[in-house]
Amino acid sequence: MRNKKRFVALMLAGLMVAGTACGNGGSKDGGAKGENTVYNTFLSADPDSIDAQKGSDMYGNTIVNNVYEPLIRLVQNDDLTLKPEAAAAKEWKVSEDAMTYTFTLRDGLKWQDGQPLTAKDFEYGIKRTADPKTGSGSSFLLADIANFQEVNEGKAPLDKLGVKALDDKTLEIKLGAPAQYFINIVPFRVCFPQRKDIVEKHGEQFGSEANTIVGCGPFKLTEWTHNSKLVLEKNKDYWNKDKVKLEKVNIRVITDTNTMMNAFQSGEVMSVSTNKPEWTSKFDKREGTKTQKVDIPAVDYFAVNHQDKLFKNKKVRQAFNIALDREGFNNTVLKGKSAPAYFWVPKAITINELKYREMAGNPVKEMADKLGDPKALLSEGLKELGMDPDPTKLEVSLIMTNSPDLKKFGEYFQQNFQNKLGVKVKLEMMEWAILSGKINKGNYQMGYLAWTADYNHPSAMMSLFTSSANAVRTGWKSPEYDKLIRDAAKEKDEKKQVELYKKAEQILADETVIIPIISGTTNCI
Image (cartoon, rainbow, N blue to C red; front, side, top):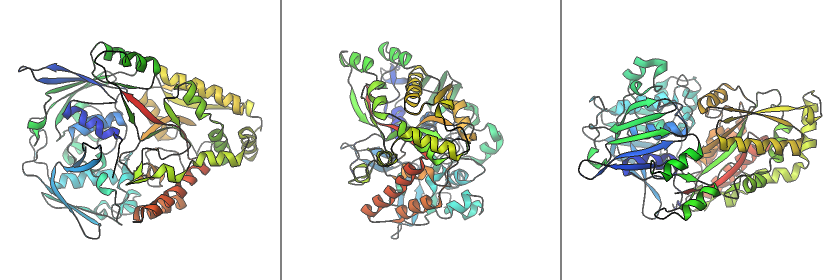
């Protein structure tokens, strides 16, 4: 499988151990013996949570991936392909029918407080992700495990989930049906181990502060000053501590792009990523600075609340979807540095050698060609709702994370929807934690978000909108869509998989479950 893309969550995890990164940056300070032992880096927002099972934001992922140890991890080969590598598990076996995965743990694994790390901790962690009481934002990634849906919907006890510690060093995971991509899910936080005693000790506060978690990975989280700074220190009880070259990682929370770039210029951080031409052109000319274009398997999009009195109407949603001028946004605001997204699964995603996007087309563009005038469509939707059909009397709320760059985005969208639909858009800028809370509670109309694939397969994007998933609370459910995703997971023929995902993606477009905006690349500097 050729994958010429760096997958963000894993890339950030590797940053701390290897001392290199793209997307968040750092600088190194010399150690006592001339070694680089301190790494100064940044996050562009404060983590929503460092609860490995409950959280799902990429900022929390950066921390979680460094304080917990997965069964296996994905590593990048010299040819940029990804392959699974032993981590807490020294080996694993897959049954002939590809339905049972058996992991054997290493000897001497410990939590940072010296307690033994066992297969029972992995069983508890995975079951906690699936437990509906946890409210995991990423539990849908476990959908292929036997009895997941029944357990996750509260219709079956946790013991029915196909995960079991056979002894302290052996973990067995049974699937409901073969899924060729499942091994690529195992390295992620949904399969991380967890300490039941620590979770129960801190209750609702677990994962909200540095002193509420106990990890087992290469680093310990020793400080978390919210919206300011996090500190990771080397875990002396980590099984592979000799390979961890850093003693300390200082992580500043920098939300403003200009502040971030100035920190890079002054040497406070070592690498950054940007598509802003004023910065890329400046750094291209800077001696000793290298720029690399990186394809990102991600899509920026508007989450749409289907429970809202306005957006519950399909024609209203479709009108906003086809009225969005993606080319204008990319060319005017982003200076052509990204690509318009008329789809949900980004171009970086493949099914082994099959390039999914090339085979699946552009469903939003196809829908727009059929529907015609978005303003007339909006008026029809308003009539169906019993509302005034004049769009100029309509005001819609768009919530966005509070940053100067995103405010520019929002101002473009305001003008776009005013011109194409006659609608007034009210921008509401807020901190990430507040925005994510509103989305999770369904207290919004439209929200600007982004999603990055956790692994290289269409299911990493498509499973996000199954009925059992709650990562993005749109309020939309479809048994037909659920069945297509289940059938695609079971299908062994890769071309047939493409067709099933294509049909499911067409449903996402036709129903305008979300409104994709851009997908593309960034420049690592």
